[in-house]
Length: 123
Length: 123
DNA sequence: CAGTATCCCGCGAGATACTG
DNA sequence: CAGTATCTCGCGGGATACTG
Image 1: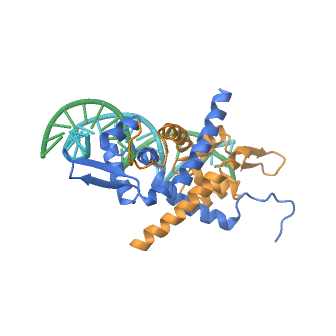
Image 2: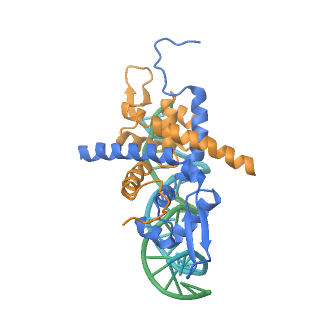
Image 3: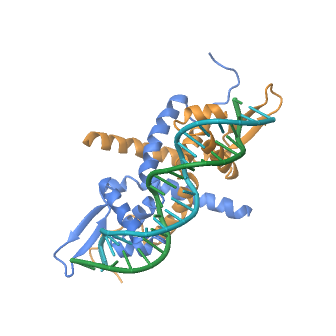
């Protein structure tokens, strides 16, 4: 069943379903308004709660707290309480799994950069 | 001010701000619940309204309609009305700009795939 | 087929205040 | 400092029905 002169789709039909489902999963986990910002901040060396809140512009303590719990459940941050400190210190650290997101973040950052230029150039 | 034995962050401080802002933009545009699904479907060769609605599981006509308008504004789909058809046919086509998202989608799909395996393997 | 019009509801998330 | 507790509200988006 070959149709003539048909433009080749960017994705094949099979890959479509595959991409749809896998991308849904990814977006579900990291597509939240704050999720990736937190991940980036943690990967950048911001490990403390208030440090994170300062770094991530506009996030409230309540939201940051619940997001961090989610991220911890997904293995994307590790919550470490250092009891041998005075006073006790809580840190949120990147994990090996966090690092698997680097390519995703890079791709997004590159595209976001391009997009920003495109938008600002035409206003 | 060099602190000894500090773990090198995955991103430098400068890159942090940069990534934060660019990634925010990207997430803002394509981080919606439906956005990327629609883009993928369009890139996969689903060009008609009802075809898209059938392909994208769970989306309502109202939401699909408004999302398509957004995507059109962002140059991520092109709405084409073929008046030389009987009856008149409306198509939503990928653009050159849509194709700039391929790497983003690939990265997300790959990660989503990995993540799904990770999740299902531990339940 | 390609949408629009309404109605409606939950929850994501902001604001503010409080606690060990 | 590192959160929790409420309270509140908008809007994203589902369901359903309608139209050229």
